[in-house]
Length: 440
Image 1 (tube, rainbow, N blue to C red):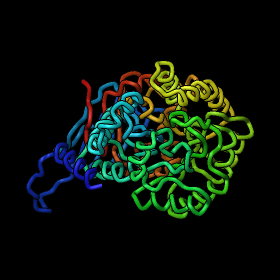
Image 2 (cartoon, rainbow, N blue to C red):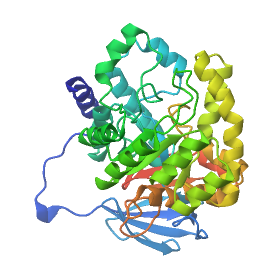
Image 3 (tube, rainbow, N blue to C red):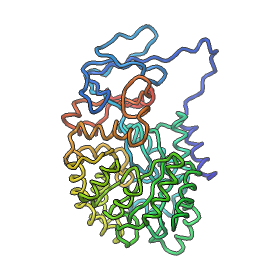
Image 4 (tube, rainbow, N blue to C red):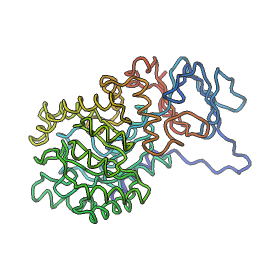
């Protein structure tokens, strides 16, 4: 853990701006910015405004007004011309410590240290932010490493999105979250660093939840079923029992943590929904009874359509081991049909990509896949803003441009409500009032 902290301390020093001498309190003035938008989608799901002015004071939105208001003396102005302005986007499923190239990761595993991983994660965080994603839910990473990155970003030392972190995914022994498929020597080398994320039996799963919370998790993720990229030929069926899921979810909720279930097979999804899980991530094999249960329980679906496409491409390019390649082929077509069914039936959907399977910075490619599956561009944008905020339980700080909200704002040229692929080319990014990216 000291190595991780040392690496991130070095990153902090590299990214941090020089600290100015402290000013007397009576001389400190609030920083006021007038942002002028050509069109403004301040609350996704509602019609956009025309020309608008957003006033930001010390990184917080203080007013949203129609028209182009002149800035008073002492206030800064950001002129975005005819750009389409909307809230910063949220990705509900990323892996900042993974690099989206499984073959490279396997080849470099024997020489990649925690310090390397920490710097890669910081790079991925910046790429994600510059792509317009100002909030992410990281759903499996070294617990101390992701916590340190989260806190460094919050302190303003490292550029990146706000991170809601899960630590390691909780799994049964031999399941998707276990380091299965390694050689005996490889397993022995990695086993001490598994962070107690494996559990067997209800009581043991309660312990595993508490372990991840102790290590800094703000959300809990567990593997209800097998997974595509784990090098285990155990399929993608249900792996955790209903009793284990119920104990895990109840424990997490008692600690005020929401719970995400990695789930492919229908039986695992149904068991997780009945146990009270907050989000089903992937939902590869969905049938009408499963979707109806999700609607009845208010369960969110995080489809991660981009991951299915990425894994299939990796399999066909020979970048996955045989056990994973077979599962990638099995799941790709089923996922598309399942997500079309869920959209058609009206399940609640929050945007997520599983980036880390795909490459960081390409997150917005998910929007076109969502529209292809039956969502309107407006609904897809809502999934990455107001819906994601509701699924996270953070409607007071994520997903809207409104007084009292952090100034997490992006802008694109063109109209994403007509052509959602415009979001793949973000021209302006502001995070908590600081301009991160501005393309002329």
